[in-house]
Length: 319
Image (tube, rainbow, N blue to C red; front, side, top):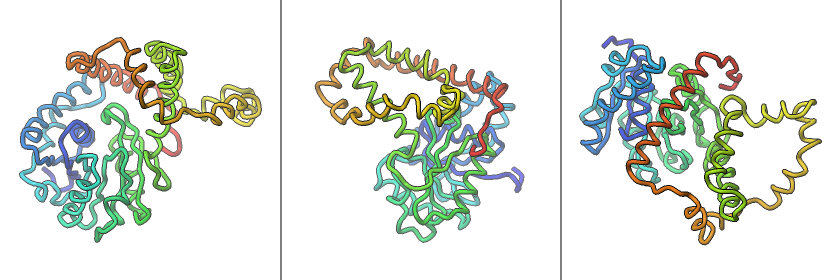
């Protein structure tokens, strides 16, 4: 490989790690994989190849064979991070594990390499505080599956440098993702807080018998979700009143004030409400069902991504 080829280490070669490897390899980077579980590491290149070929069938990868040739399994963590400029960590979602991994990365990685975690819930301050070069550490939280849903939430610790955030943002843009910056740490970042607000209300509405579980899903799939595939909530309400957002706030926020005054509480995730929700869902989570739905989800997301790539000219200034 040419010396000019950019290099990334993917630490943790499970579902999310393989997706990141797919994204970086598709974008022309040399990808080194590391995972302490040898069977996971050995199977990763084949699974990444399959994902790249699936993307190519939808026009989302130009040369899948060339891309997979850029992926290799490293013998150990030190070998994986040698001479890389970017490290995407995908280890267990436990703060003790993150601290251990990042302590090793901080010692082994090149001094100017970015150390980025895919964590979905742990702020970077919880596992980078005592590192010598902690200013280069941040969270780059993807959405599952990352190779089909491009959003990445960037969130630094109080000591993360602005330069590290800017570099990460530029790299994610270059590999085809859509980075957004969380200005200061907050549990759950932003995407999961928005998702959590909707999910809590969904649990309340189904658990209290206002609507069936399947019809609630239809409400999103055939209603809000169609708009949300290309409009955000502020863009949506801007179009829902003649005078835009100020007009919408004046006309329609009375109900939302009422709703906000009595939001769904934590009890919606406890018995007996959660028992009612589970009983309302008419399917059993068999391995066959989960595998089939995952494949269908990925096919539809790939088709949507291809459609948006052809037609979407509305990337925001903050993307």
